[in-house]
Structure formats: structure tokens, C-alpha cells
Image 1 (tube, one colour):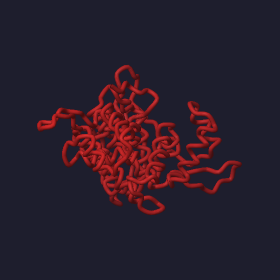
Image 2: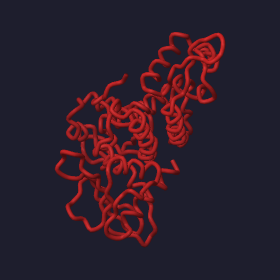
Image 3: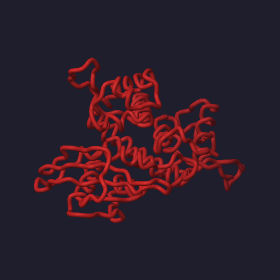
Image 4: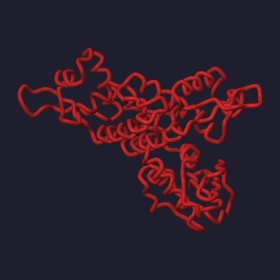
Length: 318
């Protein structure tokens, strides 16, 4: 069994699984019917038997595939898709939709190019480079000051991979370093990320990295600037994540809207905001991914509710 991985953030494990073409071929083949190893090898393009066994073992350990005895002669073991495996294929659909809109042209999920892009995205998310750049453009030196957990060379490698993948782009700057900003396409990657995180929460539970307040705030920072409301909407509101047990206060972001456009989005909230939306990490995950806003709690006017709806609708077009 896979133990909790405190070094990874929610959603990383699932996206990494789906970035490997053979894993995807296995899941798609088993979605038709359970198969024995020889049948599965035929259905997935005749990979080396040891390679196929290794990938099957990884999917079984994650809970996506299960072995079971066949019901017909000759008796043998067959591989079957589990509910998690079925959910993984749904996440793959979301990931594929995002990749199809890559800035350099459509990217097939079962290609080597997709593996590089997804790895760059996962590494950027896991190292907090993506959520940090979601606040404003920064140079590598500035990122190094903001992210203490990773060395300068490690951040440099991640930033370089993200640039090659089309996730960040250089901006004009007046200082000594080149500032980099997230592309709009990178921000839209929050939808498959949310789908992956939800899959892990539902099917892996304590074997996966938990969805944290920092994860949800990072998703806010990515998705909120993409939202577009009606022109009569203006004002300031907060999107708040309920504090987990043992934490002193809630976390979240403050958003300013002018004539339907998000003009400012900053991490941090103030107490007693008159206009807000608040929920737990799981409720926010459902709201962002599925548009299930009915379990969130709203206060003030309609601005916060309109913003959450707009975030979901924008990401649905990813």
C-alpha cells in the first residue's frame, strides 16, 4: 500500500500517473473489460512483459487496478478497473482538454510531449513556483527569496522547464533579472489539478497528500483572474477557506472587481469582511471543479457568489 507522502501536494500523484502513456493505455484497455496479462499486452501495443507488469503493479498499488480470478477455463488472474481507475479516466479527459489548448498547438495526452508538460506543471505546483507566480510576475532571484524550501538551481530548473512547456513567459523588466509571468493556459491547468486532487481525496484518502488550505488558496490565485462577470458588478470580496482543526484563523484571498473584471487578487484576508464566500477545502474543491456552490456559505451582496460561479464557468471551457 502507498503511505502518505508529505513531500507532495494534492493532485501531483494522479497527474504523474496519467502523464505516463502506458498507464493511460492500460486504463483505456481495461475500461472495455477485464483482461489477463497476455490480452492486455496485445491491447496496449505489445510492450515488454516486464514493463507492463511494472506499470500494472504501480496502478494496483495506487488502487486503480485490481487482480481477480477469472470465471472461465483455464483459470487465471485477470486485471480489472476499479472505481478509482474509472475516475482516473475522467481526470484524463480533463487533462486532455487542457493539453489540447496548449499555446504551441494541441498536445496529445498519450505523447511524450504531454509527459514533459505535465511534469513541468506538477513540479511547478509542488515547488510552489506556480502559486507564487500567480500573485505577480517575478524573477528567479525573487522566487528564490520567496521559496525557501528549494535551492536556487532547483528553482532555475523548474522555471526553465515551465518556460519550455509554455507555462510561463518572460515579461519586460527594469531590474537585473527577467520577470516571468504565468500564461493564461497555465492558470487554466487548475481544473485538471482540482479533478486530480478530488480523485485522490475520494479514493486514496489517508494514502494521498491531503488537500490543504494552501492548495485551495493557490487554486484561487490561479483561477480568479480568469473570471469575467457582468459589467454591473464592482466591489471587493473575500474567498475564505475554513481553518482546519488546530489552526488559529481562516486563510483565503481578497479580490477587487471593477465593471465585471478582476483588477486585483491578493493572498490574505481581513476579519469581518461584509462580502465573502467561505467553505472547507473539500467544498471549495467541489465548487471549483463541479460548480457545486450550494454548500458554500455566502455573505454580503451577490459579488462573491457571482465570482465563484464565473470561476467555474471559465474553467469549464478549459
